[in-house]
Length: 204
Image 1 (cartoon, rainbow, N blue to C red):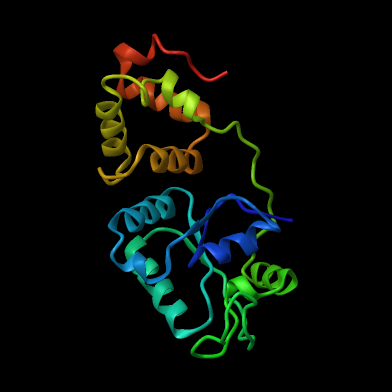
Image 2: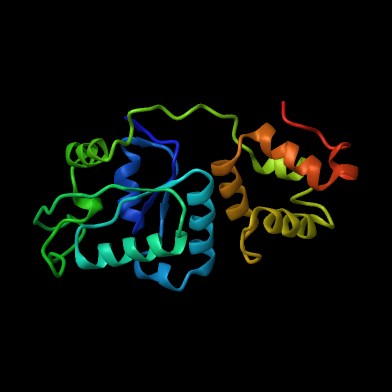
């Protein structure tokens, strides 16, 4: 099992499914070329790269390198670890024909090949610190869900953290779980809403 404290960025959901079999950590799928027009996702990746760093794992074909390049340009000076897979020719089981270049993508590679790719990039040599995740129940207790001013409070949090305003509540929850420990995030809320969060229940 590979344990990653940095989020891993892949192209599609089938890549994510394959990695989830032996990677313990956050895996985000960009949706392929849709990442080029997804400003919310690009901004999220930029913030993550600056805060924790990100791992980019795309296919070895031309499309994969274009997507990798787009992400790299979007995060600018953020920390990036590039994991590159070898050129392995073949066809994924779910497909009726090989890809344009005839290469297997991340979804079609074996665990052994992918583990070796991570090893070469120096990923997985340190274990991710266990953490008490921030939950939807926490968001409710902290007034970020289920209250009349929850939308206003989330907007303020997104502004303070540099997230796009169109980010959904679920996306915000996922992002803060990647960027912060529960007690660390709660202390930020106390700073941003001093007259309110002091009356809310803190992390246990």
